[in-house]
Length: 242
Image: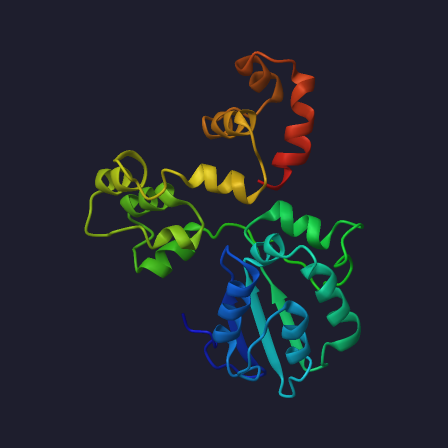
């Protein structure tokens, strides 16, 4: 992984994508990714890590991707970061926190009970990218109908675009992504639900119904053989971020 982003006018830019794992492993990877932003010393805790960040002198931008993974491993990280932002963050350092779990990002930054509430200078809700961007990224002609069908197979998430093998037919791509044994996106719905902390068979069933084109809560309730009022909580709270 390239830890320093391409050189642009302005501050030096560093990027690290968090992984799921123990706190010590996560901190170790982060320190390797963003070297030489901080001194090359052993960092045993998040408090020590932010003490090193407080020493940054040159204008710098640090982007931490999948930030919720770090908080899951160490729930006190939000409070430690709050203290850093309020008291120790050098004026020439900017931190960008990213996460694919909208539910957790919302609870971390928009919940009045969170230590990081009102600490964000700006909050961006990133939407899926459109067909034009897909064609530009893959070098495809947007006027060809087959290319729109390729886009329809993966949607507007750039991570999935790498799975499009242009040497294969549409049917072959669909088979490899969804239908054959060990398909690349076979377990993606479960991963999405896990990231959003949605658990239970009801959550999976609602997601499946939405995928089949069901939009009205009354129709969902009818297909699930339950009262429509039973869907108020999962639809209003759990699926508001999907």
